[in-house]
Length: 249
Image (cartoon, rainbow, N blue to C red; front, side, top):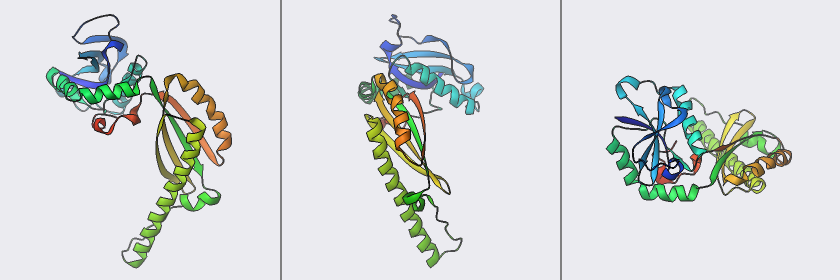
């Protein structure tokens, strides 16, 4: 039997008073392709899975399946700490699943302990090109031909990219002071001829979600020429250690 894996969590969060060491059904939730979702015990952990038939289900991991995967992870997150698996993670046998847990047991344990009681919040900051930001958000077009002009434009583009990242970091520092998260991960990209999008993931204490959300209004007033969009709480997708990134969404 093959297993489609959604995430790993602590077994004690899934047992509901039972002591079974065999997979048991999680009521009221469907996974990819409408499959029942089960909790598969392995040591002190449980892997949240669905039965998967490579012949029957091949080619069905589409956009809807992506949403189904995320939904199962979110539901599991309501009951305890989760370490999300990458979409499309499939174990071809019981032994393969258990071996993966055994091989990563120490890293899983450290990650669960570090992320227990934590949640991820997303903050998207759309910066409109204005004032000192105008130069940073304007794009540099590379010529179609090679030669001196191309190299000049390439250097100009690299300089503009560095300037954009510098300004994004400065703004993210301001955002950090306003929201005061435990950890953060920041990315920046140009989204139009006159703007850039700063995508910020914040790791916070789950008990502080309401306080974090209340800071949104204050932040929206202080960050001039910016549009803010907040979402969460989410499972801590962005805060898994590097050694687990091979299985994390």
